[in-house]
Amino acid sequence: MMKWFTTSNRWKHFVGSLIIGALADTIYCASLAGIGTAGALEFKDKQYGGKWDWVDFVITIAGVAIGYTLRYTLISILK
Image 1 (tube, rainbow, N blue to C red):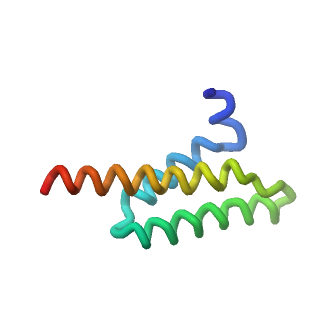
Image 2 (image 1 turned 120 degrees about the horizontal axis):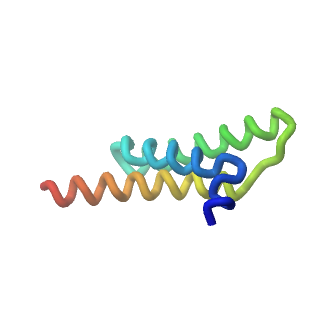
Image 3 (image 1 turned 180 degrees about the vertical axis):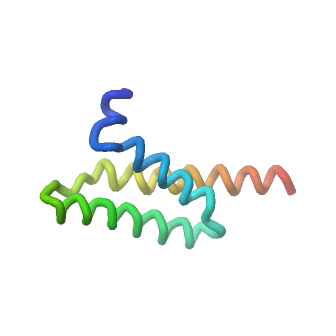
């Protein structure tokens, strides 16, 4: 599992997007930032001769969703 996760810098996609999700104020903001970031990262890979990696794209969006969920849960608990 760790070998798969470290392939193609997937862990960087996940950690970076986790931070984006945790800093987003609303689900709308998190969604736009996550999809925009995932698309930009994959577009950059494709422009530099690589290929579009749907796994990296999904991992980036999943990281944003998890980050936002953690933020929302923490704020709900502290209220």
